[in-house]
Length: 382
Image (cartoon, rainbow, N blue to C red; front, top):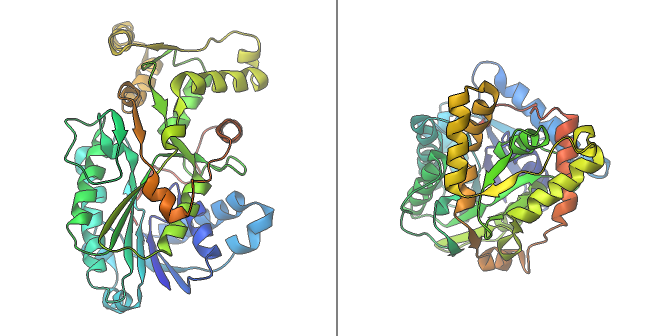
């Protein structure tokens, strides 16, 4: 089996490439990597270093295996490939995994549409030219549910009445574009991939990690939410393992899967208590009780807090809130993701790890790295 992966240098990349390299069924693994200026080789080096660190000593040999890189860019027609390479590659592919995305919640609508919607359109164009194609596996996000509440089924639905941010909107549109391509299609909607359950490794720190950073500094005194608010997150290595297994399973027509904690998602109150307990055991300000646990407040109270910060002109808090408000309001729309189809692909219940242990490892890893990614920014266009 021959597989093409886009987005290999993104936040999930090291975990996903590792799992694909472990798969004995895969004969050739192609990675589409951006070729702008001299950055391509640097990205691959960062990816390989991330794979080795994420794997640990037990799987370091797998992480060092060679992969075939294909210069290109999902934003471009023909995926930016050089003359002849596009037509030569298409007949060779059995599976395309499209994980490239712009995941910046604060990016402009035009930037997000170019990568998330335009990119999938170009990838579908390649998939339609692959005579051996067993599936196009699109890595999406559970956030496409927008401001819906309640139980979210594993299916394509009408556009929600609203979205928390433009990232969610463009990913919803991307799913519709993929479904309109009439190729064997599996959509994997991931919940928040928080880091490695094995050692806390995070390849690219995202919005949730920055929230932990601000939380620990006492810069988030309150969080909007309700008694029903839940945070659904998955270890990155478990999500990658599911995608690799799904790539081996052919699909007829269209299948949507929630790779998520589902009914085992963590309540907002329990999450805050866990982070506070961890911080009080490891960080001086929390040990000394100089910092207090943030309160869970209504939307109205949180909005009043935002306005008071703006009026006070506190530049640091303004910057924190500007970023946090691109995703924190999602907590005001509690939902539970159905996971039956994802479990069917896996063969049984998803192998969720102890979330408290994973969270502690991720926080410790972030502190050790100063919450700074080696692989920045939060985009992967290839």
